[in-house]
Image (tube, rainbow, N blue to C red; front, side, top):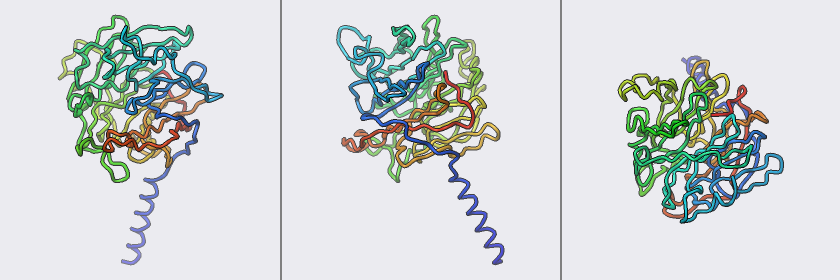
Length: 368
């Protein structure tokens, strides 16, 4: 019996140790004075990042020189300045992606300044506006909160994950928004269905529930990415235990009914409550694990979930993106849980805000 107890103890210890194993260390790349939401990169490797809208920043999007680490408004100050004469400015940006053509696409979910939600593309090669895609009310209802997107230049679509928590929404209207790059046509798909709805898995950080007026905030369709060939889209609600996968051509196929579309969705793996999502060329998925100050990885070989990296200052890791120039994955720490809306009107965030980076298991996928 004694030997059995000793053996069992060793097994439990090994399991616990293995569960806490960190695959790689992260390093602080830079610090900022305001919370960073999502990150993308120019062709030369400079960081373009959104200031998290939960903190009502003066400048919505910034660009940081990768060498000097100096930042300025992106694409310029005028685009970060609200006005009444037109809505050719950035109002409320979180999702931000680059494409292979050097265009940075910014997802403006609006919700303030009385402007229309839109996708703004800025050509970093010519330093001028590429195009604006407006999102009509039919695709962006009151509860909509377009959070992140895949920029699929192969098939010609923006695939947007909508959290469903805008204007007091409870996540029950989480959905996809599909935008045709050629025509600008938009469609809202899979609203409030089994894979876009949040599960009852409250976000708990240091024992405290993420709640508004004592009600758990449950967030729908959130993290999203696509593989290197745009064959599959991977996604899931922020509050949920599963990552789902669907073929891109099925998701954008207008001939499929919602029932037929739902039947083509696979449950891919387990996951923690997560925000951002990225992928490498081997198909390993990187997820910002909000509750544990870490980035998790779902391994392609067995779809198991491991801790990729973590840091005590990685408070609310948000966006995670690959920089094709230096070979690092970058992740922001937005401190969203410390925002005033979750703390009885008092902003508890502390400066500085961090941008970390770490080496992925293999080369990442840049243009998603």
